Image (cartoon, rainbow, N blue to C red; front, side, top):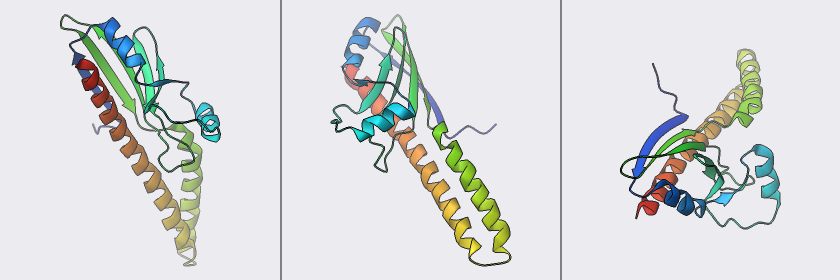
Length: 166
């Protein structure tokens, strides 16, 4: 079975206690809802980006993503969900990162229709070939940005966890 390239999981064990981890981890990100509309309205405001992560932490879990502005090309799509649990040696953190943003489904639907119509029309007229290359190029661009964001979020979380462990 082929692994989904838009999902990644990892587990980290820290040498600090769960309560201490939650206190330190709370200071590392900006507390905010993670949804398309809250991100959109934040991008319109003139807020400063103070911290590299945004999200929420609850008693035994968290939900985070990279902090970005939507009007730039590096719109963050990957969302990390984690579970925090105690162990004999400290704290265990299980993280699942989903790199696919479901807000892109309407775009992919439109691109699929344009691609299909352009591909069929390409046999009759060369101008339809532009639609094929354009729709496929937009798809590849958004897909690659999602994969890059997944990797960046994993690196960011790994570095944050290592810094908290010290």
